[in-house]
Image 1 (tube, rainbow, N blue to C red):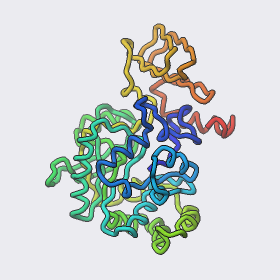
Image 2 (cartoon, helix red, strand yellow; image 1 turned 30 degrees about the vertical axis):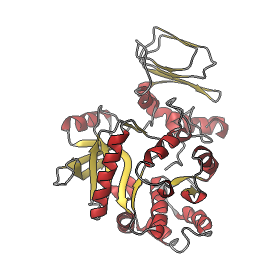
Image 3 (cartoon, helix red, strand yellow; image 1 turned 90 degrees about the horizontal axis):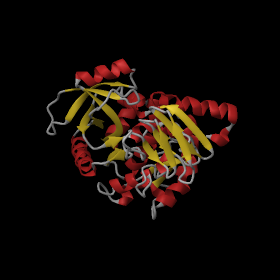
Image 4 (spheres, rainbow, N blue to C red; image 1 turned 120 degrees about the vertical axis):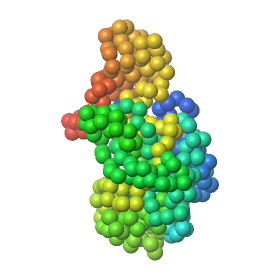
Length: 352
């Protein structure tokens, strides 16, 4: 999935060039390229499909050299993850009705790739053997209010890391997140899902029949020249809804596999902070000409040719990109989406 705009990474991530197409970690590869190369360890390149917005198709072709056009699924509108997943899975089902699929965001960090491959292969076996929906869960390290949480119950599985899902909770408040952490039976929801196309289509038909009807109508045209015209019309009939709300929170055949894969959704500047080298005052600085005085616990990301002098800051985000300067307390970074909406309303589209 590579169609989002990464608004919480504003002002670096912009509508015209969102974070999945950027090398925000300084590795020499964009997040999309890292994700694509990671999945080459799990399946051949002809089986990797990238779902993105119409406006990013050329960016995908530019960054994934040699990718065939038929492996890029172009969405005419942003309608969240449920239509994205439905489009891909209904299309793949016409190519191979017995396909086992993994759905993954293109902009996440996974540092323990060997462990990740092992975890996905274990989930593939589970998904191939029964009608079920599996998600990767991450052992929480802190009471983070920006993640979704999955509560599990013990169940007898060949892989003892796989548990039956009891409940999903989206972005709890701090007190609830602390309780989840202490209870020991909650995992972070990574947003990485594994299932057969048969199982997920069954789930759409049962729990989200409106979306199932929309994409079922395309069975005769998927993988033909008429597919693009069909999708352009289909998306006008899709509601904006996540796969979690459309299916996972309603289904009773959902499992989670706990995994320690060095994961971060890189959803916020605070989450990026943990993955950048820090100085002796715990400042994470990207920029060659930054001078810090009496400042600690900050994340700073500025152009390399910009001289920046900061004094007296504690636990702040300072970012300059695209002629925009953001200064925000780290603890208030969830407000960045609000800032973006306000900027769009008051200052115009050119700044977002």
